[in-house]
Image (cartoon, rainbow over all chains, first blue to last red):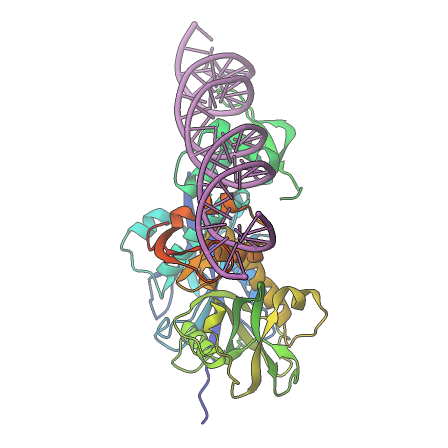
Length: 217
Length: 217
DNA sequence: ACAATAGTGTCTGTGAGACAGTATCGA
DNA sequence: TCGATACTGTCTCACAGACACTATTGT
């Protein structure tokens, strides 16, 4: 007995997260064509012949957000049958974290312009997103929260040099709760090294700039 | 300008781990046909039309190891161009953990019989595995080690009722180091509830059987 | 009584949490 | 001097690590 196997198209969907205005944001585009014309969706590209999944993700990120040299990791692969009403498409989602100062949103070819959306607002609203993209975003947001606890991904939201109050705010946003200054600094101390630079111009005590220690764990 | 997009076949490759003889083992099959004829490989199936990825994984597990109702989770999706010398195949790998008493290895249709292999021995040997399956196994083994630390996956290697010495041995094997009895029991205590049953017949003090607490975190 | 394994009590050090205090800028 | 934010000191408590001790079976 012979079976029919799938030869679906492979899409790479991108979750580009950043922090702006003290909120976690994600890059979304408004779909310019059916299905889901006019709905918000994740930016994404189809995988080309001769292109790996990682390559496609990288290309998508630079096309949609004008970014290269960015942290990204594979998130999950979505294979529900009815994800796309037209035909079967398998979506490999990628999680990407970036300092908002580096983002340059550009109108993609098949999409209207990309915009930053507040993630918590989006997930608690009843806004209808294209495909299963609401689920994907929720999954990505969970992953970020979890990895914040036991990795250094939070650093990816900041430039190379940053102050501890900035870093603490990033952690607070990602974890969704307030942290104590003194405890936070003790915990982070082994992961950073100080520069000689300080903030200046603010009407209060200046803050030292640090950078990530290239070091081990 | 038009691009050629991929319409690859989608495979699901299965990492079925278990513990036997106080060692972490994995189910492998010897390939019956080219490419890599005669090499060890992960059991796998192609995704059929109308079948989700999870469905395909479930089907593969029951075909190759005679198992249903088993813990499994998606691991990673492998999309290198030259994974398969014939044509492009995207592989979605699944991690599955199972009590070895439940495994019934059966000869698949396209494979010779499935066998349990010692994972540490395999990874430290220079045995040549089919495709990129050595990388996939190494990745899965890492994932298990990590999740052992902050989830309860270790319980999946045991039957519903188990003794604490058994459970401790599972943890020790997965983590690759010895643990102190007293500390281990204190840490596990909130996750389990005791049955009234005890081991018997051994020439030493009997051990109580416990089960997992259905409870919260 | 002994071998063998199951199970407990307790000391110690580390680190998270909580909070109060001090320091340094511009205006 | 004051408002504002940066930074530090320290107490407490929970918990992991280490290790010594007791308990219960079959032979």
